[in-house]
Length: 430
Image 1 (cartoon, rainbow, N blue to C red):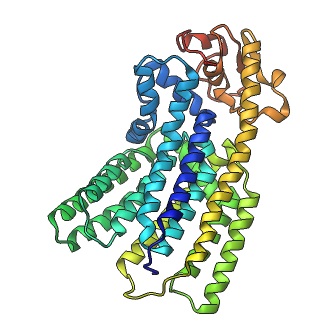
Image 2 (cartoon, rainbow, N blue to C red; image 1 turned 90 degrees about the vertical axis):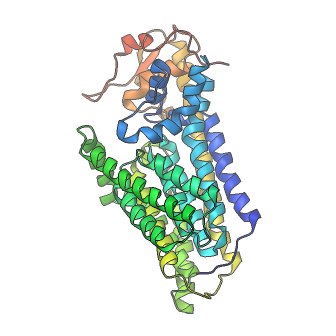
Image 3 (tube, rainbow, N blue to C red; image 1 turned 60 degrees about the vertical axis):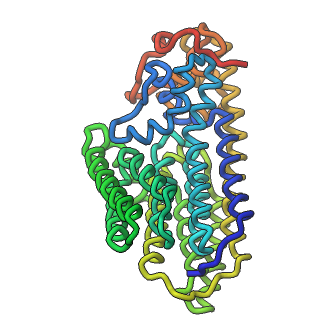
């Protein structure tokens, strides 16, 4: 591929954009979207990591900031929500940023990593409680470390072993990616000479293989089939379609950057890919429901990127033509555009959040959300977690508890028993 370094400024621009966007979302309590409010409620009530044991390590990393806040005695749920968001949004953004810097050695790989980072962030962060939000950047980071041609130093070995350790119990997508990374790491271990790198790759191979075993356990767990069927449904039905259009567009663009196609075909791929990314971004729906549906498609994008990295590592050309650096503006602009769409959706979500909070503070006892939340302010409503969110946003312990009719769905506690779930000291600070 085009082994020509990307300027530090371009990498800083993309990385800073991701981190700033994640911090803005965390500050607006977006991590409470979907199932997030119930996760934080359990952190507060128990002081422990919440989630299945097959995803324990990933949840430990993501919930650590909020758990530290609880352990230190914080009772301001606004602060705890921000800490919760730091774990679920800012930490993944920082890992994506590190991956982007590792990809700077090759313009084609850089374009792929930047594009996939924007695609995953822009389509999944509105449902950041999904463990895949952390698993995806960690998987890409590990793939980039294995892709690196120079010998590993201690920092590379530590990153690789640390990432593979967390991935042991983070997300069931490791059933595929874990096996892929295990084979790749074992292959690299057999090829390298320095003892540090050889043993580090062997450890990564073993941990990646273990992650696949844990993923199998998660897939056959009695609780998981419903989740697995849901993810498979959205993959098979290609929902949301703008995500899959973006994957195709990015694949065409990266193919056009590389040395594989004749000149005319290369420019056709670049133009078609750019058009696909533009249409996908303009058509993208950003909401918690859409982000929930995007989990499978984002995982497919990461797997495709791993394939690109491995192919370049296995059959790296000796002197390929370096692509025009100006073409990198396309994936960079894609990241900026898709995060702008998210920022616009965040404004609507924040307005809905403010409306929800005002109705909770104005109410007393259980109140149907259908009666008090206007139709154009329902972005924060997520069926079974509405009572939980009410507890977290209340300004006083005697505030109301909103709820939605469940129609037989999961109800963790009755709205009448909501006040018993956490201590009255936990209120939303002003």
